[in-house]
Image 1 (cartoon, rainbow, N blue to C red):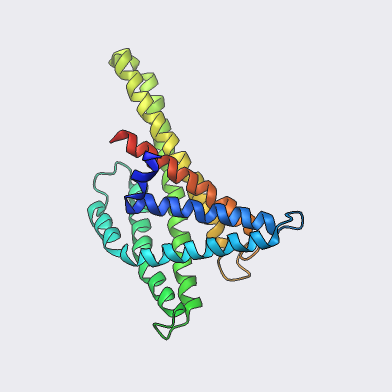
Image 2 (tube, rainbow, N blue to C red):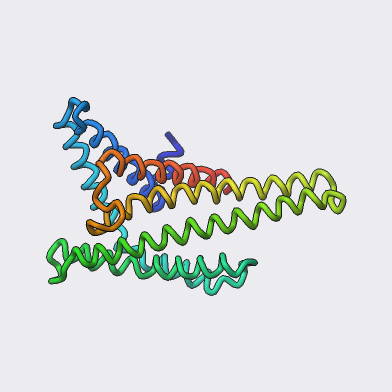
Length: 236
């Protein structure tokens, strides 16, 4: 309970918890609306909760541009990265993320009639940028996993250069990073599945997911996000 309360005190922690509740409501609501669900009225109420929480998150993201800019500026051209492919994927992903926010803000303002714009067009733009960012994130993590495998293999072949204890610590560090990157791949692909579902009809499986499947994909990435957040908190 204390850990949950501490998470709610931070913006990122609260967003991840709200996201988890949002997608779990969508998952349960979608299941209750299936022919064998038996509780359609409760299902509709849960989907309404999910929609309102999603709207809440969109409103809070109105203030994320500056933090994203500072992150992108801090990363710069990725001079600390050892691999050029990882650097290129990261820079392009940061650019997609930076452009995503103003596009979503315009779509949000158009929905509420604050701006006289076609909200559907801007939602498509923002969703496309989100999809691109997720795809690049998955590719980046895949590349990092490949590099870590090579380093892990190299550490096994050079045991004579290190003490057994230091070699084990090095290998353990590589394995922990590999596990984190693999989880990131799963998270990105789960969100990417939903992002494509929300694209205009006719694009791959756009519009073909039932509500419970959207909730399930979102829950997969949300649970991974909560796990990563808890691991980060333990490292502090």
